[in-house]
Length: 433
Image (cartoon, rainbow, N blue to C red; front, side, top):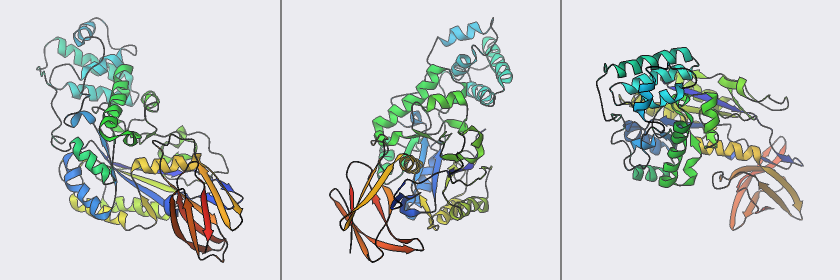
């Protein structure tokens, strides 16, 4: 069973500094932390109810969508492999075991009988939890009933009524232009740990291809495999297709606190905050807002909220009043940067892979910042913090054809200026006034 939950990622980082003059701030505008509001499954009230509230409050959201549920999608649910009739016949003489379970599980949900998806999901949940013997038994029972004709036929797979009429690709393009993000939740909604290689790759690659075709390359950065799977085999395939994932990101500078044992050893000089994952069903408004308060109070925290249903439609729905109150609470926290999941991950990876240098040349400071990542996907400006002459009142920041002014700030460590810079070959020139 899926769960409504909140994830907190703590970013572990040393900040690139040259001559103690310029550093990249942990978050844009030197915010204390970040929040990403994410949704799964594309149920209709996410767009009818939540989007207008987010737009009014100026909050972007990330929608992890099953691409085949959107009208006009090229890639539809299919089984890739031998004929299903051949697989069914084979089950009479050969019990399910580790050598054939992934093929049989992949085929099960396409057997044209009622309840096939339920049997697949039951088996998939056991596989995802590592209880293979239980999964063997579920599939053997299913195929035995199919062979005996004990399950009523159903030639067409039923559509999910919560998503019918929820979204078109034109809607997705419009909402993307408004600042929201659409990301892959696969072609359908399977337990990825239960699929064999061909069908697992199909779900990953074809959902990406659909989004690339409809929304462009920038929308292909993020994914979330259904049911929040953390299965090593599925995650391994996923990491070959998508740069960032809400399932897991095994990066040495990110501590996903509820799964910290999977991460690389933490170097002692890294700064990090330990936290624990909050997994809740039908979370109270006080609990939801408490996560936001904690993110605002801590240093370098990324809170990722996960929402499914709203107002009776979708899994474990929230009420409109709770959505309104929770989003208003997020919007009230000036300490937090509210960003899509993709943009928050972009900023983290850009910052941690970037090199920044600065040097004084005459009356100007010349700064360079760049990273080796693919700039078609990792294209966010970074916020730089440069020490300046305390006598300066204002700084003119010039990079390429863009010129802006920035105020000088003062702290117990001296005067400094905050400004945005685009990583790349173009240098940044700071002039004082």
